Length: 290
Ligand SMILES: [Fe+2]
Ligand SMILES: [Fe+2]
Image 1 (cartoon, rainbow, N blue to C red):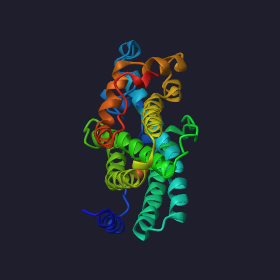
Image 2 (image 1 turned 45 degrees about the vertical axis):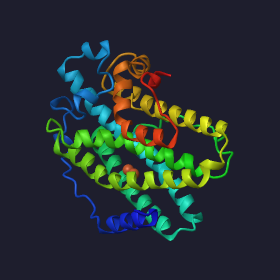
Image 3 (image 1 turned 60 degrees about the horizontal axis):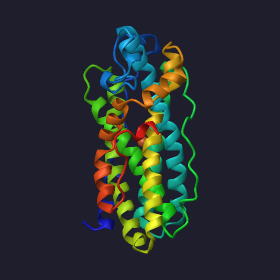
Image 4 (image 1 turned 90 degrees about the vertical axis):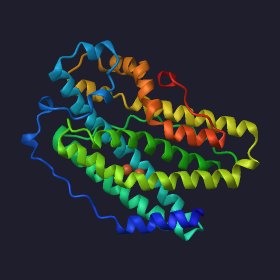
């Protein structure tokens, strides 16, 4: 299918999409220790001695604060996606892309409102932005800045979507948590198609003119971005709120664990295959700890 046709189909699908209606329980009904809030296999401490040392109540409490940390991470990243989408919307010459960037920004706004509402209602706050700013010196060649933007959007959304898909169908989680993951996945399935189209289009237009050193730098940049996203999934704020001692040391322990690398590699697998075909191999196991 031609790129324009794919994007026009996405525009039509976004225009048809209704907003999610979510079953928010009253804050008084939400008890962190009463159930799982993150699938236990996906909690960042799994695979470390610290997880072994936690009893069931402590594990469930951590799963609650990790849900709030995961949703907060999404809010902060979506703010950057919206700004980048609006900036590119203002200068694109392609009306289908412009229309989709409008849908994209609006849908990300809705996601942030949904994630933020969970955090404010039940955790009492949004966790601070812990992402690491990356130098912009990769954007030296023509088309490179846009390529990096859309490649990073694609990678982040792919990682988040893997968690969304797994938790939307996990019957151990409360309906509100499953509904948030389900609602996010519904829109992100379209964003992922758009992201692949844009990355492919920019690669085809610009990569032939990029020297080998530029391609190597791009590969290294994207590998570093994946690793940094993996570290963001390990939240010292969540450990602290869950009552665990030495949260910063725990974060280092969790981020360096082979289990965290395995979870990240699984989450990024589809994109890894996509980028490998372009000629940009992504993270190997273990890089999450760098
Ligand atoms: Fe989103
Ligand atoms: Fe998205």
